[in-house]
Image (cartoon, rainbow, N blue to C red):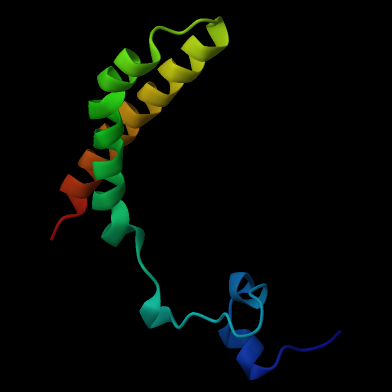
Length: 92
C-alpha cells in the first residue's frame, strides 16, 4: 500500500479532487458565515417579489404550477427566517 507524502497528508480529500492549478489557499476561502446575510437578502427579495410575479403570470393553470409556486415561496420564507435566526445568533 502506498504511503501518503507530506503534501498529500496536509491536503484533505476534497482538495485532492480539484484540477491542477485550481488550488485555493485556506486564507482565500469564504466562510458561510460571511455570505449568509447575502443569501438571506436574496430569500427576502423572492418573498417580496412574489405578489408582483403573481400579478404578471396570473394564477396557476395546473396543479403542477401551483405546487411549484407554493414550494418556492415556502422555501424562500423558510430560508429567510432560518438565515435571519442563524445571522442573529452568529453576529459578532
